[in-house]
Image (cartoon, rainbow, N blue to C red):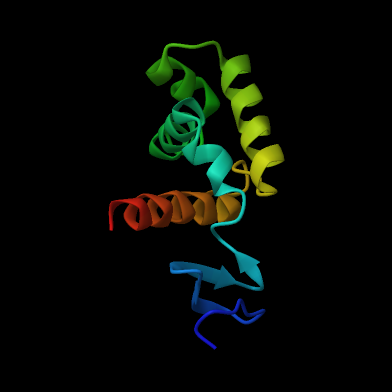
Length: 105
């Protein structure tokens, strides 16, 4: 079943793209919205690098903290995963990294 998605946790391949499935969630779903918007991807990474601190993220990106909140909401709406929740942030970071490596392969 290499070309089907599964509801179990683990690595699966579908249409030539390897993805991580965690608790039935395909970590690559919704990531296209992030990969198409470098601003959202940069915000996500800066937020993680700043230990999920909005004020520090805003300073690093040289934007107002409200802008960071707005971008985090956009990420949540586009992906269905809330980067303000640690587990979801990890999923999103992993999925963006997997998306990059599949494009570079």
